[in-house]
Length: 357
Image (cartoon, rainbow, N blue to C red; front, side):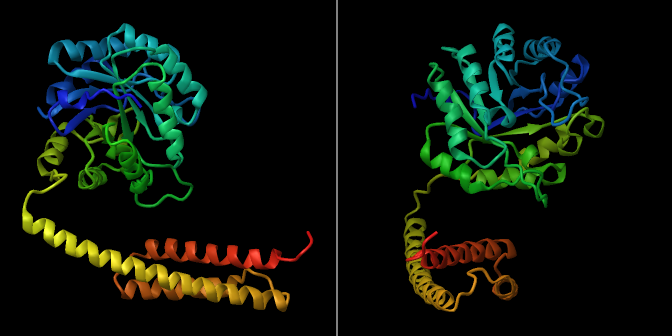
């Protein structure tokens, strides 16, 4: 992709903050007046794609006037979400500095293409949130559609992924997907939206710090002067005062270190990791050979591949052992599930050999 470096025009790291939704001009101006000086871009949702009808779906185009007032009175760059081509045209008309495409829109290539064509050739910055489902290609595809229309000031926002099973976070971070994006396109700035990942204002700081541990370029944080009274996403918004505290406490990690001792120690430890990884792979290879023998035995005796009682017992034992070894239960569960699925695949292949279907 043809990408223009725009983030260097801002002080690093980049902080974007403001309410989830624009509610009134007074609300917008009050929040803007209380934001910490590190915030350079003011955000507010004018149009709000919602899951169910009869929910608050934003104030609409009138909110663009309020955004412009924030820009004129306080000198912020301003940004809002656009969900269709008409939104894009209105945002350009009101000279909104930065536009972002939300997770619900990113999943729809036709919608993204229409927005891209409406923005064709713009020199505005356009940010794309990851799709609601964990699909790296869909995320990249949205950026490619924009780039194909001559839009070169692009950025990505990681806001986590929806899952049926809810636990600590509203949206699962699945950091590896964001890091895969960063590795593939290091020239595209990657921001984190800790508000939507957390879903709980008490977890926003924790998520924000994790993103900086991974070398993210900035944050978009939902901020409201009275968050409990917010018209949307009340639980995940922080006050301007809390945002000041979060920014003050953040530890910004360096991408590299010139210290010679650091590099020597790091290289030694990485060599140890490489040795351990090779040993793990060798053990996995040996394990799969045993799985193959089991598959042949099951085929000979006409026994089903999947044995749920055996699998449940194995999983419980491994999780118990994991806790004893200081490993996380989720990690071991995912690891053992992957191994089990590969074993099942091997045994199914054996069952299919020389069998007419």
